[in-house]
Length: 278
Image 1: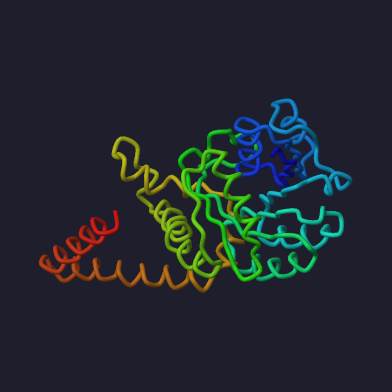
Image 2: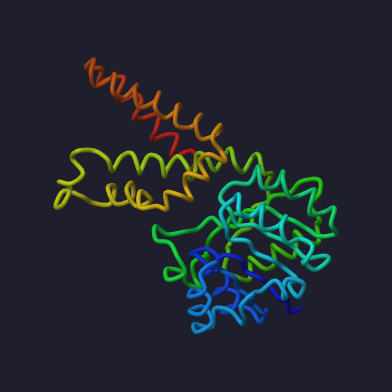
């Protein structure tokens, strides 16, 4: 059955979601962005059917929120009185704990359904101009479940995201999501950002291959967004950074002390760890 879906925030993720819905389904898409020119471009590119205004909130069967974490909470709380009863609200932020804690029970108390979501896909560029309909092809969509989650709403979200090209939908809990994402995503952004600050970096031309490109790609980030994401998950991320720093010191100490056997052992351990997990 066709639905009316509102997409709030038409940056890279929101814009790509809107385009993917239009390209892959017959659902109606309403889009909203704080920049009027972005909505005009989205309409011209057929990324949405109409601009989402407060008067249309109660027409939406689903709302996809592609905003900064704190903005997601304030948007829902400020506007929930205008939403349709039974609407399925899915956020797309990169952290889940604080958002789900603030909204899951509260939204359910209003006769609506909230699901914390995280599309595991992105590129180093941002904004609607970088969005495209196939961004999520083959990607994983994470959906968070708790005791307030409506299973029918959860299934509806799973069906939607699968139709948009996601290869897999992972169901987890918000706390588990944030613990794992501190390692798989946030730590990688910290390492990339710190790595590129070496005094040698400006001299890299002619000396680089795939390893340099892989390690530096995500250093090109939106510092305001990632600062908020890091601080929303600061306990988990701090633990990962400190653990990595300790392990790096072991490699440095082996070099300093001429411990070739220790270095071979650590390198072997890392190789075996990668082989074990894929």
